[in-house]
Image 1 (tube, rainbow, N blue to C red):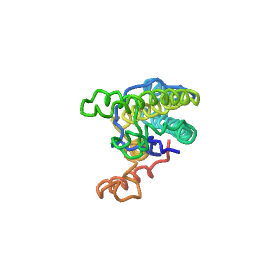
Image 2: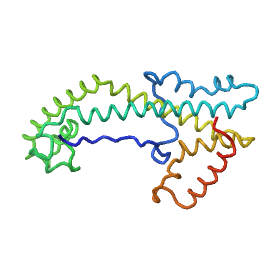
Image 3: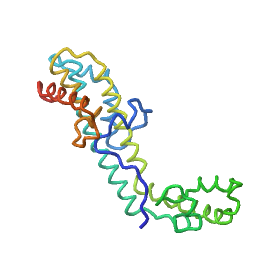
Length: 231
């Protein structure tokens, strides 16, 4: 079995790794309605009760959107694991064992059709063109099989649902953190956004994930959160 290179999402993505503003994507499957609701602050505010502030109402929606994200992430991770275990392996001609293996830039990777297309235009590698022609045909066939497998297991639908849940949390979290807070409960709402979405690495047990200033800020936020129950 060839090790396949996938980028597995972290259980708690860091804002350092993901831009705060992402391109909006269509939402799919069971996450669509709830994630879309999280992206509609005007609707959410209208649903707040007379005893509940707008920021607290948004905090409740954030908790719901966080649940949607976690469910979408589990489905996406399961789909990626299935790709790793059941998906077609690249043929040997495309791997390090093949005639062009010595030209691969990353150990354990394999040639894609796009890379081979450019190799066939590289005059400095003219001596490798016969092997590259055969590898190019094999790459096209392999990538077609891989696409069919992904369609069969619904990989792209699951991926888009995951991306949509991320978009929803980013937009809703940004809205909450830029709103003025007038009470301990509202500050707690903002603190939970920072802890569970914006900067989760500040609470990591690994020393390299946060410096002393960040960990001090995390302790303050924990104190703020403790002042009020979760929404």
